[in-house]
Image: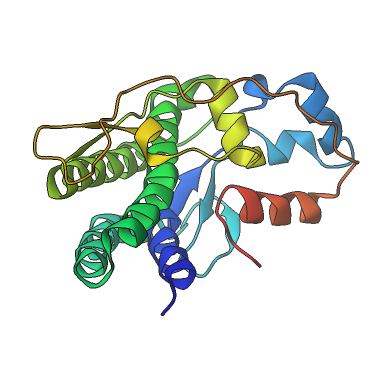
Length: 227
């Protein structure tokens, strides 16, 4: 399996299942214009589940929350997979794989924490839903700590709103040295530092899109899904 296919498989386990919502309040007006033809009230500030089958469905009574209980196991599989790849690949190729994986991981650590802390400000939910957001965030944080321990790096997950939008736009490329900080036993040659990594870039206006197109755009941008 090639490195891109390996990364795709790793990221799929990283982001499925994923409980989330899109808060309208943090989206700039220039970006909001792109959503002019969809039902804003149901698209934003609504808790949805990105399931193991790749579908995004609104949460309702009887929703399959139990998928989220699989999260720690799936992330544990990723640790084992990365260790296997480290043994099989040369240093530069493994560093490139880890760099791309860390780019995704830091986004989910930050975003899952932010959603858990702020869900009451954006969504009307049943009490048990917040506990699932907490469970999800705990799984990502533990995974980050395992990555740091196994590969002797420090991952900076303190992102700004601009960095989140840039992640969604995918108009910048970030090197591993800007994503992590080193520890004494680091296997990487360069000395890393925890720095603010992305400069501000203008938000381009997008054409009006339908709800179906918006969901498809969400899958392709946030979750790297080709479907």
